Length: 439
Picture 1 (tube, rainbow, N blue to C red):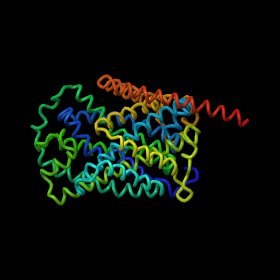
Picture 2 (cartoon, helix red, strand yellow; picture 1 turned 90 degrees about the vertical axis):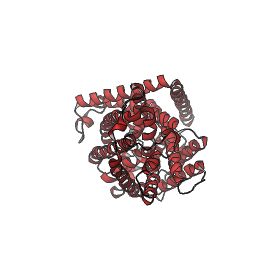
Picture 3 (spheres, rainbow, N blue to C red; picture 1 turned 90 degrees about the horizontal axis):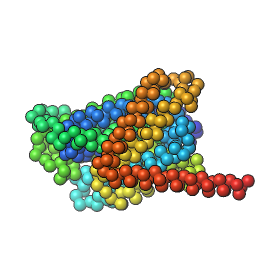
Picture 4 (cartoon, rainbow, N blue to C red; picture 1 turned 60 degrees about the vertical axis):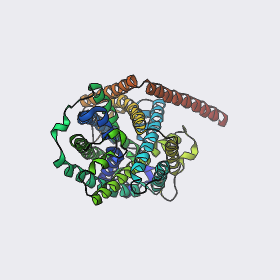
């Protein structure tokens, strides 16, 4: 699909930044920091520092894989080449299960703030409707998606900056004591869920084939995006931790808005709510843009039904896979679940994806040989090996710690991996049988 896309229709540097920032920051910045503060107290700042450190490793790995193999559905393409088609499929199978839940999580976040303007609106209906709307927008082409994304991201970043800057005069250091009121385990748990806030960087792999000059725009775009994201989450967490607004974060669904009420005039409060709604929209928009491509690539590889390879003749977008991902996300919304549960399940899925990416990255010099040696963007072998080992160890450690705290999630992971394995081998047998009959 990207081979037929003209260069002027591809995504440039700032398109990469707006897409990634909109996807990574999104509405979760207005919800998760408060939930993590409830778990870890002021140590939420430390939790985000840990999560951010891990994200740096993820960004470096994504930059190397993305510049070597820029493609739609880049996770499947990269892992298939570096490991095997089975592991490529399994990584995407787990990833899709995770990101469908992410979309439902964001849809509910959108609805939580939407009711500020439309009290009494059905949140499930609102969440499902916004996902379907952006599914339609994505069918009209990635260039339109990016323009839409840019406008929304600029607006919510301006409002986020105003929230942080105007909140600083109300900040009191005494509110940071005790810094770790619930013990070190609470910080680790908060850091794991907090990683949900940064996990979206790796989503760039899924639309790498639609990026102009990938060897330049991917690493630079990731670097700029990381700085913006880290500053945003750090700033919001600082304000929530340092202002004594007398709010029980566990009992409110719109924590940032509740804190803002203590120092924002009403007209500015309304603008903040609009920006939060815009932030949710950017994430939903980015999710559909990125992960519909995984469905498309799996279908092209005959691992999913052929109708999912349908491409819009007018817009050149993978309309079949966009519709499929949109409908799966709506189904997840209709099932319903707590925001915290969705976030934790989703981040565990993304961590599993990173295990596959880490192993694949380690094998790059061996498998890609001259391509790696002659690449315009190339990590030195020693650094490449360090990054791959760190990514594997960090991802595996976070998975193990969370499964120990919540054994149910371990059973869920095994169930998803098992179902994917069974599906892969059943479809392989069907394909083999069909090929034998055809011959």
